[in-house]
Length: 475
Image (cartoon, rainbow, N blue to C red; front, side):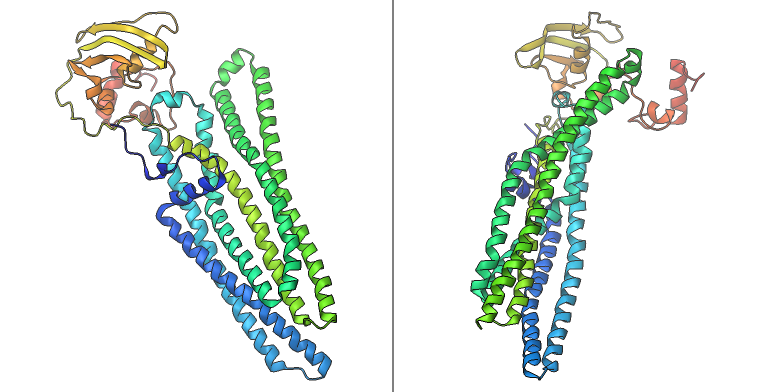
């Protein structure tokens, strides 16, 4: 029976921005309530911000009337000032709290995602990992998760708050003076549609950038891990050429992604400035014919800013979400990979191992239709020493991998003391054998850490093992 799918595998891999964004939001889990709280506080602050221009309008009209009529209503003006000070103080406090809650959810998201990737890698068949390059896997663990950590919750929250501000600003402008509202909104909407066209074109470059980053990590990891081979065979020129090509590809994709995303705030800034001009010209004409007072123009200048800035933030959030979605799809592809069979229900093999190993008509292929082990049979008695000799590619390492259950046979069976390896949990299979690989790997740490990797031995047992294999002289 296959292992149950985790909660984050509820959605299929998304090729659209909205689907991936929803999946990230659900992935955050219970910590999304921090985002809810942060968004709620930001929305309340936005409402207070949208109310404030009405007091600016009243205060401007009082000053204008005082200048024209000779009597300045200082009590009314100071009252407006007090209300505005209170409103902006509330806005500052609420937005400060929101700025703490929402990023904390992003940090948790990155932390949880790295933990899930770490758990997942121990449950993935080696056959799946063999198809990935080490540098690409490292890039998913580091670069992709860091991109999600830094921006995910902030971008989602900014997008929702921006939508609230856009709707609220439009409503308040229509309430204040509907004719001037229509004139002020048209330039901003035109700019937003242009930005959305850019967004649609830029997504492919964010995806390509994430993929190219994985390629350059792979190349660097392979080059430095095999630097002695590179030097011995004078391969520096070839490696340098490959690096230049991959690096140029990364530069090209990153530059195009950044160029297109940087255009969006400039376009929205330009449109906002056009909006100010339109409001001033149209508003002045309406003041001259007596339709409105000067306070309406002041209020609309603020509303145009409150309408244009959220559009800019919305476009920036969508741009950030494209980068996040490109990284998230790579991470979720790894998290959604097929897992090895759940073996928790298999019983423990409690008897001492005698060591009789049998291969019974074993057949195996790494890829369907390309069989590499053809009906292999072998019996090894306890205490017997057997050497399997053959040319490169004949299947010697494959036989050892099958014995350790790194891979499963296509047909046939492998037994130890008459018990099929399929009926034994993998950790117990690994306990039965000692394996010395062709490629050695030293982990960071002391010699003791490497000799006792995965085990807890006493000093006496370790000394005895070192003496038995003859390494005490140089350890």
